Image 1 (cartoon, rainbow, N blue to C red):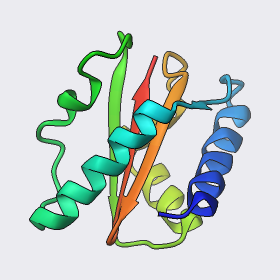
Image 2 (cartoon, rainbow, N blue to C red; image 1 turned 45 degrees about the vertical axis):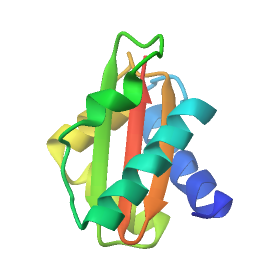
Image 3 (cartoon, rainbow, N blue to C red; image 1 turned 90 degrees about the vertical axis):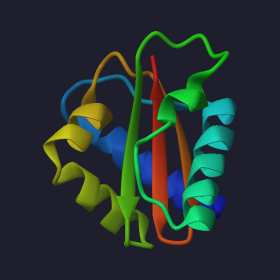
Image 4 (cartoon, one colour; image 1 turned 180 degrees about the vertical axis):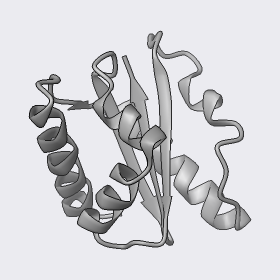
Length: 116
């Protein structure tokens, strides 16, 4: 996954949060590593599911947890638009309690893991 992909997606997410006066996300390197691992595992297993996402938070100090998954788009703008068009995914992106995010991308799967 490219750093440019992650930076562009994070910028779009933070712009959406700014529109609703929510604080910007900070990228958490541990969440990013776990999001990347989830994306790679789903890719290798030909699986696309929220099953097991709680394992990504083992040992981390986050009381609020969430995950967004997108499949298909390879462009950060298209991924962001797909997620913002879904009420549940949009709610995760805009949720004020979420302050940290990790982003992973493999094959055609994007994973966003949120903590707060």
